[in-house]
Image (cartoon, rainbow, N blue to C red):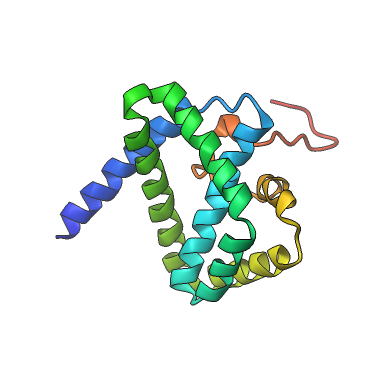
Length: 161
């Protein structure tokens, strides 16, 4: 049974990696859509793992508009990249994202839950129009957001290699 589940997870991760590599993120809205989805999924996992269901429900209601808008940008990008396979590829991406975040929550439950609690608190007083900017400003996991969709950060006093 473990081998079957492991194979399914690996398969969805590989499919997700292909989907992530296809992202172009030519606009700020496209870039933000990946970050918003990553944040939404992280908070959904926190709702289940950490018992933050009420906080997640409040988040989903408060930020319903921006969540829908980001979802539409993701669908548009996947349609452009995959045509008739877009829905399947997007579902694989979202599933793999949830699997990775779930694995992180299990590996470091206390820190994962504490971080989720801080995030819920920060979102509590935030206007819904700020969700995309907040999501992009947060650190993204190495595969949660395609590299072409991550903001570039230049450190002062360093030279590129």
